[in-house]
Length: 233
Length: 233
Image (tube, rainbow over all chains, first blue to last red; front, side, top):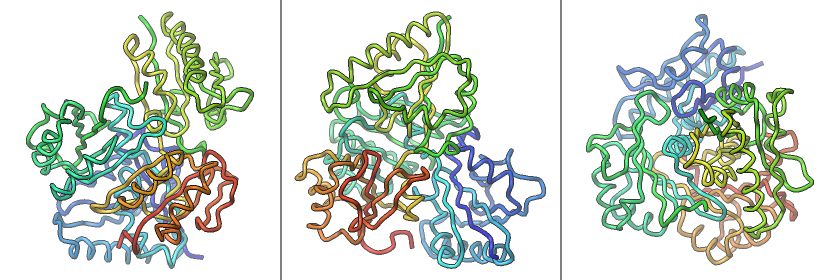
């Protein structure tokens, strides 16, 4: 009997936004795996830290900080092989994923490598988009409204055309793209409708009108934009 | 001192996809409120049933089943007034919301009526879109992909143009609009890329290729569509 691979969403950062199912799986896990940037702390592990057994075997996947795909994918090759070794001998493996595993999550790279050979279960988590909406006090979508989710690294022209054609918009991974994104939103005359959020639900979270957002945004930052008046009345 | 209004996301349906924070708030609540269709069971209450104290005061908002806005809004007027009465005398009120309160959630109608007078906290929940992706084994978005969320009741022409211009698509509230939506997706040559999911994470959940989906879909059904080949490799 081989083990089961669990991809477990941890939510946006506050440890108590973990689901009951995820907490139970993490507490019972004999093997946990998670990514971290090379030389840095693992954000996923920090969210779940209080739930991990002191006896658990931990598989750390060190992912280089680069926009090139090759080096990061090589790190997931190594991690997937270590995880497969545990699964082969009948151990379950719980992979810790910030947010939701299938929503811009790196768990997908492990899933692609392992799901044809092993039983996999994905535990969905609270995503950053609804977490940001909650801390900003901004409903995202109501009734028959449409929501468009865009990554901030997209080219300026594409951002412009997609925002212009959208209704409610969430822009992820703002980080060093803030200046470009704010310029696009300003050109479209929408800056007064936009809110900037960083590190939602963590103790050092920031919520500001987009016009007041800092030039240097962290990777975990987002812009929410709703056109027109109160959309939920 | 007035009480605090909590809008608490319960996730897609499985009781153990409630977050730790939501569970703690529900267990400690002296007043809980929730909507139900007139004469029907409350889906929100059913998700949280095991956590509600037997001593809790329950405020039921009976919402008429109609696409007209007036009658439903009148029900929220009544519910908001009852909730305000409790808040005025210093009681906290926990409003139970399936999914996430700010993601197509009826909690927004209470928030609009009460948030200017009372302290409000929104607890985000797991949305149906990532829950559907997890049970379908389908990553939603990776890297710099864009996600478009569309409600099924939109007019056919708008669905067609928005799906044609999108990348990864989640269509909510499919229900009686299934035939229309499937025809649009088929015309666009995308039916082989689409999965139908109903009642995700509940015991009677259904996951099928869209081409095999039943003609009579329940309200809580969704279509996930990703264009092209495996998006996560």
